[in-house]
Amino acid sequence: MKRIVEIVPARPGWYARWRLSPEDTRSYAVSLWALLEDADGTGREVVGVDCIGQWPGADDNEAGGEFVRYLFQTPDSGSPEDAEPLRTEQQRTTGPRLQPVTAP
Image (tube, rainbow, N blue to C red):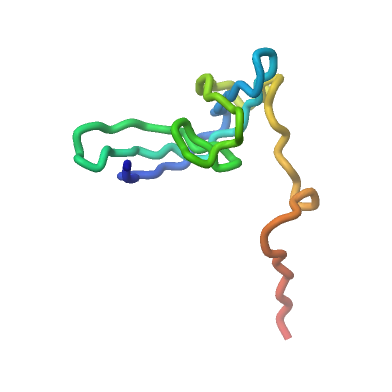
């Protein structure tokens, strides 16, 4: 088992690419970088956690997906062709809905 030593937010433009089939890949924006350490403290590695909560080596990644690589594209150059579009607030169907509070 590994433990998280440190977490830092990822800068815009980083993506994790996953192979879904021999001819199909999907890239998801990386949300954060995590420094993982082996339980015995002998080894460390940095992994990027993507916007849907996957990272290389996680037990609960999407079934059939195989991590390919991390890639960077400057934000002004757009996202990769195989990027999963980010959902807007109206498209999200899970999680609590917050209502604005108005002063009396």
